Length: 147
Image (tube, rainbow, N blue to C red; front, top):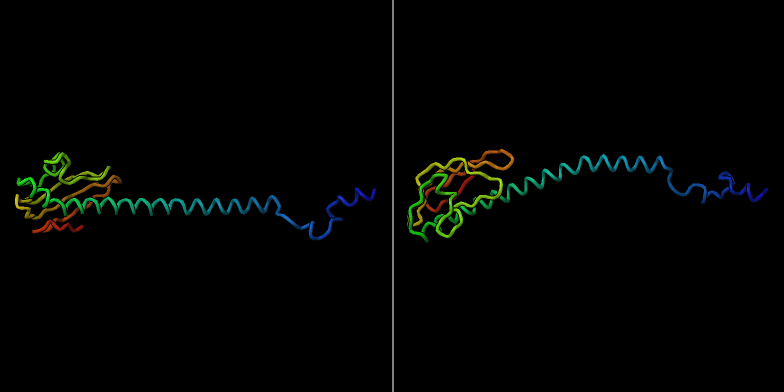
């Protein structure tokens, strides 16, 4: 009978009796961790989407900077219109190669001369999430500025 009395929790030594966590404590911790993940995950997603959009915008700006050199290679005048800037050019790729999901809505200005001199203009772009941006191309070396 004394052996059975030892197996009751009240008779256990103090170090053994209070080790471990109860089920309620574990569930509360898991609930708190789940709530934190629910708050942090969307914030990280928004941060990554913003970083991708900035990277894509940088690609478009670099394409604008390369435009005079590509026009100079072909020795052809390029007019500022949507079809001239997005259709296949001499080397087979568009003059302004837009990232996936981006769309060139409008192009206003005079164009790029065969010598590579840029006469300036504006490009109106639509991002995949629907945001519309305008890039102003300054005269001379086709320096793009986000408006």
